[in-house]
Amino acid sequence: MKQYKIKVDGKEYMVEVEEISSGNEVPSSARTVVNSQSAVQKEQPETPKVKQAKSDAKPAAVTSTGAGEEIKAPMPGKILKVNVSEGDNVNEGDTVLILEAMKMENEIISNSSGTVKKVSVSVNDMVETDDTLLIIG
Image (cartoon, rainbow, N blue to C red; front, side, top):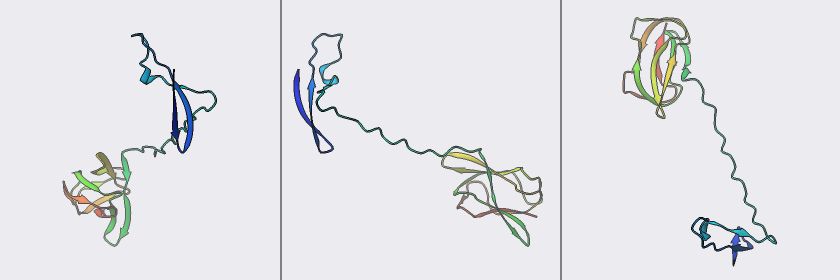
């Protein structure tokens, strides 16, 4: 066995490395035995916090105006598909357009029933959070 002194986070430790010569064993560079007098304790890396994925249907921000309810972009992204045009009737819960954000397709749904008064975006438009997408009256 070969003995080595190593330093981890400012602390010195003595380790012994066993040299193995047979072909069936783990190579000596991959097998390390820690001296029992000063065991190296590894800290477990902190588990990153991950937000739970929600449904692809995104409730759109709604603002009431004199002309009707504005459906606003809930996040920045690119308009992939517009499912309605001016004059169309929509029901609450209908998918009115598809917004791509972070390589995910997000369905933007209507929060109210009514007639589409104005469509403010078209396919391939880039939008920012709270941009008006369409107005339902």
